[in-house]
Amino acid sequence: MVIFKYNKSEHKDAMVYLLKLRELGSFLIESLPKRGWIAFKDGDPVGAIFLRSGEGFGMIDSLITNPSFSSEDRHIAIEFLMNKLIKQAKQMKFTKLIALSSDKSAIMRSERYHFFLLPHRLMVSELSDGGV
Image (cartoon, rainbow, N blue to C red; front, side, top):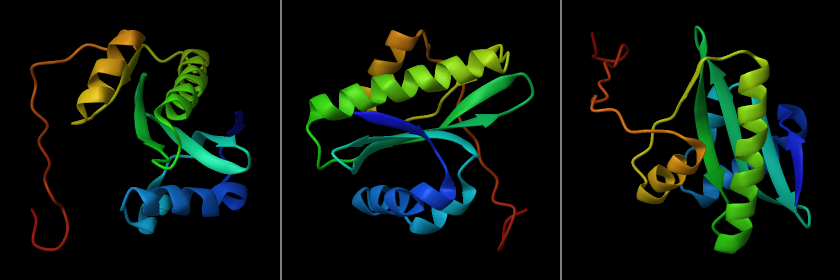
């Protein structure tokens, strides 16, 4: 497994491939944060993760894995990617790291990294095309 700092010009095709495998729109690539990492095994992308920055905190953005790989390979990739992201967040002196997910395994995995669930509910307001 090899981890690279994400470079849009070098890794765009790999990210489009991962998004397609997860039936997500390739247009999402345009909204990814600049800080990210991508894991490859034998030249194929296994997973990617991105770090979005707020005021004093970081947010995990778009942790995505390749379902073609074994769960063990995906697990190893997630471990490497999370460690890179956490190291970067600490270097940036973030005081908190937040994440959003509805995936049960991601929520269970988050406990290993000392995340805890909050009682809050996420609310969204659409600001374009008929929104506020």
